[in-house]
Length: 181
Image 1 (cartoon, one colour):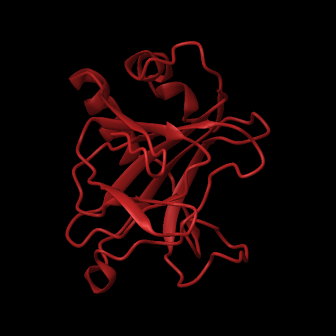
Image 2 (cartoon, rainbow, N blue to C red; image 1 turned 90 degrees about the vertical axis):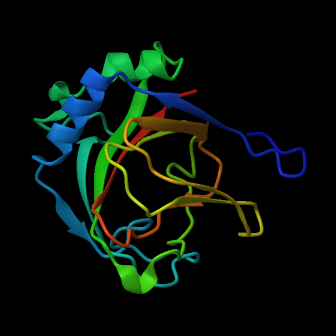
């Protein structure tokens, strides 16, 4: 998808079934940690409006520290599937959002994962959920919505503002990977 008006670009990819099953199984066994807001964690930010709590497990942080669960994930096949087999990851975490029908369809706080670094974002959806990922232009207008589908990976420029949204019926898992360009 490409728009000349806002230069938004996203590519979609699919992981092999064996990798889909592995990641789906792993995401259900990870220990998760609570954060006040899914975009800004427990920190204040100018774009932080309403609170959208979530749970996250950091697999790889910005300092290069890895969770004990990191090695269990199929990182090389993910990189190959999205056409970035040689790109180095700078950060990876799995998120878990419980159904919140009261705010279904409402975009969470928009953000850029690594605001001070050039990066590429890959969002992998381990399960089907109805909480879309929203994409915004520089004026914070919604320009695209992407519905999570099991096995789908969306890849986009890390300078693109985006946000999750709460599912209404099922738990929403997302594997968020930030790569160096």
